[in-house]
Amino acid sequence: HYLANNGWVVGWDASKDFAAPGSLVYLFRDLVCWSDCVKLRFGERPEDAPFLWQHMKMYCVEAAEVFHGVRLDNCHSTPLHVAKYMLTEARRVRPQLWVYAELFTGDMKVDWMFEEQLGLNSLIREAMNAHNGSNLAYEVEKYSGKPMGMLCGSEPQLPSARQS
Picture 1: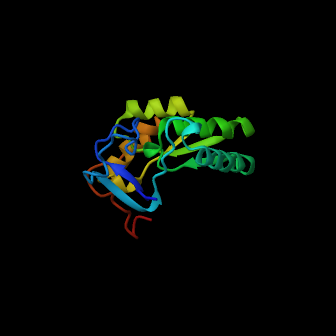
Picture 2 (picture 1 turned 180 degrees about the vertical axis):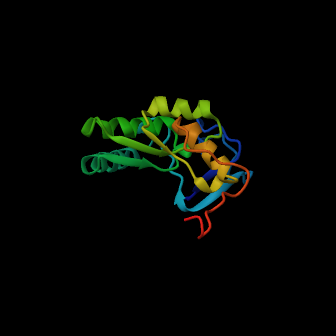
Picture 3 (picture 1 turned 45 degrees about the vertical axis):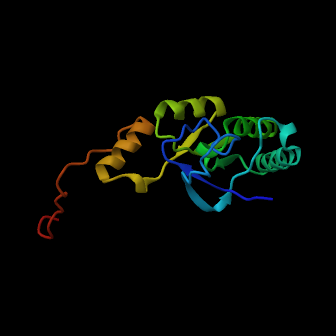
């Protein structure tokens, strides 16, 4: 048996499984490795790994029975057909299941494709990737569509004790 860690591949097309047969990501060491999770090889259909598909299906169904919303962690490195199958099964139990997805594709069109195909309700972004306050405000507005205020180039002037 072999174990492969999950992770992220710079510039990788998130709609493709980097661990699929024929991929050289691990061999060429292109993976930014996350040591806290493993990459599961589901194959293309439940018949390719029956125990794994059934086990994860039951996990998703049980989560949907208990919770009104779930977080799809590492959505960008979860094979799309697997995520679609598991969310379909979870929504059989709870049709209005709210799905938060951690999705970093680097391309808004690819993000939209994931949102549309998986029926995502919210995306999780990392604020630590913003270079400064203005960039953070831009990212919030870009993904929410609502302005969050104005940031200017200089530090705000606080009122002195005499002015209060």
